[in-house]
Image (cartoon, rainbow, N blue to C red; front, side):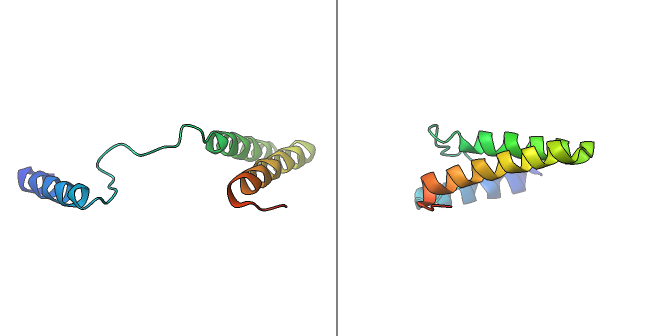
Length: 82
């Protein structure tokens, strides 16, 4: 990115922020109360590791744990009763 690109990006950032729009230029507004994302990613990684291992019992247990995390998140955030 050269100087003209940087100035164009800065102008765009100012315009977006000035109009109240969210941008990728600044920090996100992560919800500190939302720890389900971490739980979901951990369960997903555990499932992937189990699947790579080839152990069917471990894969089934990890899949069940991942489903539980998703169900809990849907119940909490969307009011779904799965």
